[in-house]
Image (cartoon, rainbow, N blue to C red; front, side, top):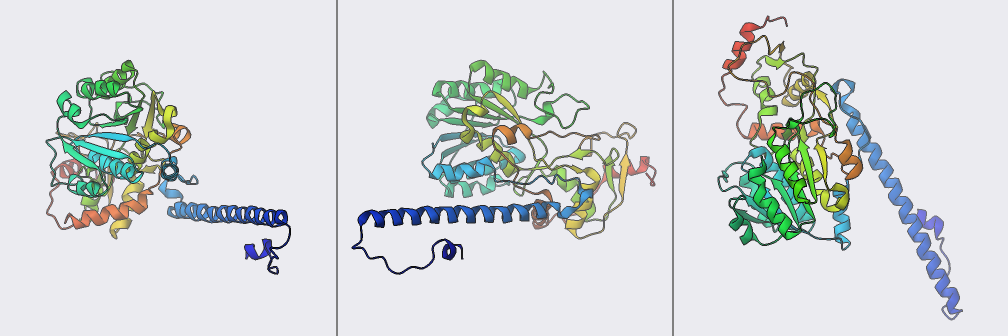
Length: 411
């Protein structure tokens, strides 16, 4: 319709006319077509953003979710820029044997390979390859990812792999475990060294959300790694994730704690008053933030980035959402003071007070944005929970019974 308005029908042009007239007409039509196309794209973008805002708001005010307008992340846009002859990197991912971090590595390798980078993933030789997410690493090989297993702390292992342009360190817990890889990266002259740290290194405080400028525990191994990378003068970036979940993880404590009790109609013990705010971040969003350094370049260097969703939810509201997804009534929530209940070991997967970080720096400086909505992803997570047979599995809850025996039932 727009084309018919801008370019009304006309009789066939007589090509015996002046050549300049012909060329001018062709150029004019091309410009008009470009304007129409740009207007159409802007219109579609407006419709899409409106739809996404509507989807974000459907949970209602009680969910405590952010309703900031979503936008395409820079990492997503980088896929288009790569197709337009942008740099392609030879990437090394150092992967530990943990299920939570293992899913980060899975998504990171998948995303970078899709973007056209040459990806090698070096896994811990103690990895249980038959367990998720590692049992799915065959998918990565289908995308051209080279997968090796060996000791990342061995100079010989890294020497055999060759040289790389970028290193993603998803394994180091202290200086001793990062030194060999960091020294090699310095030798290779890498353009990026991205380190997966932890938000757990922040000192307890009362300022929330926690920003990157807040003090950290000097004894933290992750602090040792950050300091060593900085001492080498590497183009490093450190990412501090918090409470990661995903469909492929085998570290399921955060969410299974609730589903295990909800599907069995058991009371759910909650340390604290249940109004503490938390963030739960999809492993693919963590991976996309890590990968964004390749597009950000020097803007990412020598900096720390909090790595979490910008969606906040209270613990009590999380229980209500989980019950809704499981299709059962919300069970009784029993709040307790962990200082007054005697337990041999901690049972509750979260803290009993606010503990959440803000990803504002990554959004502003890396152009990153969270692409996964918690309630939507929890539906997929619960299907995985059901597929693992966990809804029917026999379970006992001795720690719960101890808590319930010490807390008045009306609390």
